[in-house]
Image 1 (cartoon, rainbow, N blue to C red):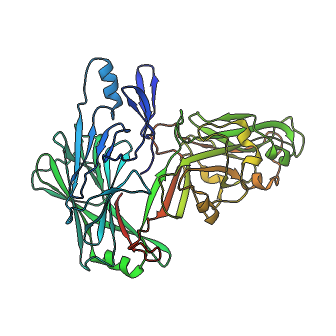
Image 2: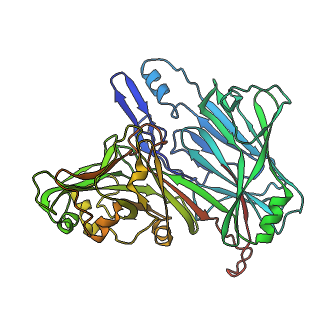
Image 3: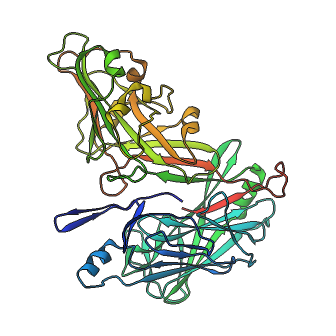
Length: 487
């Protein structure tokens, strides 16, 4: 699962509801999301209730019982109820009705081994903006047939209808109508609202060949069974199965992470700054911060500035942008990663001296707030975690990605918080750039997680190896898994 947060801020008579969840509003106030499955196969520490089936052919249900909607909370306080309970049910049409169990390594997932010949079923939950069960099919390409493969699921709700999201929505098919999803997505929703429904997108498969990641798009076929039910078929062509078999490798899955907006619950992002004029470059780089900002709507990253009152070769200030990510839901070895930052369209960019940027380690005292002391070089790493980019890439409206190198991949914590800072190469080396003259500076603007939605948030995209499942009790005998996951 990919952790998210749900933050609500009251601005006058309006509420700003963000699409990233770490907490939910219960009848007793805010509660932390806990997605671990209980022994009775339920999850209740969510803004909706989830029940997983005992066996592979059973029904997995999610009940949006009002806690999913901030609007409903507001309405109920005013004596109304505009959004009734909405239940969604997912049923895998497996060939075996094998009993499932909670994954001991990932307690937020249920596993049903050999639900189909040579393939296992996994269920989890996605607690983003939309209500959704995450369905994963793990396929051993050496044990399945050589022809095309089909894996069917039924989704239903007695209060929802199917809509197509392709810029021309809604598509409201009749009974018996079918649809093939490619770039489009389809969702079962109440009142044509994808925020209260199950979203379906075209499926993608991953595996490795000659140590290179291979991604294959596969078909997703949808048919309307009745007004309440749709049937979804994942169609995997024989060529994809054959390619995975010949590659003899594991398939990989990916995830995307964001820092929490303010008020933080797990991770923070923001600036630390040292304003201390008339210093050498080395002294300016080495000292503790004088100010910090971890709750503003935009942050100007000052890569070094000179005051008009400073003498030649003396510097005034520098800032560093820190970004933390809760990557504890990952599993396996990290094979690739990219850290992305976005500049606002109006964002000014001034470059009075040449600047090259990279990603390095940071160790703030807290995961949820920044302190001036976090700016001190003793709390920062010097090993470059990424490829470098020139500051000029942060022209207004640009999104700049820093692809991780080996040292950065090892720094991603698959069981905890991954912590990074964007710095200049001159900052790390304590080697002064060309002095820009009195009043000179080089800076750009980064949008933090405090802005509504996630489109402009700092974003860490990670690809990891799928879990290797032993075929027997012998550790040396492992099963080659071909993992199919809806994106």
